[in-house]
Length: 245
Ligand code: ATP
Ligand code: MG
Image 1 (tube, rainbow, N blue to C red):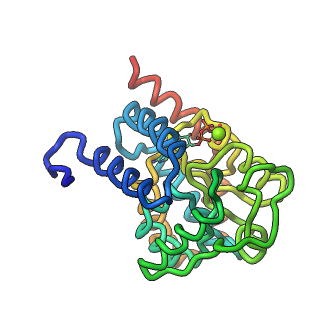
Image 2 (image 1 turned 30 degrees about the horizontal axis):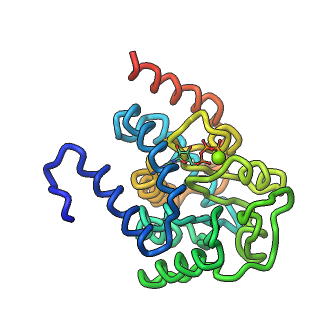
């Protein structure tokens, strides 16, 4: 089905279609679709556009990724079908590795399919096979690559579950999250949270990284010092409440 370009809900319908195709291909799970629905509801309440708070967080995220020695972008099925090209472009800009990581079974098969999906777009990503475990997790998300997420100093996650965000932090990894729900455990636990749709947030972080690329490390650190995630989340929450009034 072609979604008419002038349809008022064009972006949302197009994303649903991508997920549907992803599900038929075996990359997305039915539960992934439910998680997407929750995100869509928050997006609706946020006016389906990038807020000033999200822009601020994206700038901090870009600074953090540029400062990282071993940055990794962690992708699951939803992220793979919604933003494959954008993720590859961001990874190139900040020199990050990409790692497939999923929550639901069949995990091995889906990791393989995600890797293939990225390969088709010319990018090589980790996660086809795993050789390390993040401590404190019983789900499939514990399984990672030693040279990828396991040894990363900064990991960018999206549509992430709160458990793994917590486990990654215990693992002493700096976590940047893209999450439309400012109240989720992931949003609250991450070091930097970009409250925006991944389809807008990933290109935004890339744009910010391009602007910051030439900066010195002390200038990037200054940006991080000036950013408060708890304050930013509170402002995003207030924005939601304002839209509900
Ligand atoms: P948590 O485990 O962090 O408390 P949760 O259990 O409420 O979160 P999950 O299903 O674990 O939710 O995680 C999915 C998260 O991703 C949700 O917070 C949802 O709002 C968000 N989300 C869904 N679709 C998108 C999207 N397209 N862009 C950004 N965030 C999204
Ligand atoms: Mg959860």
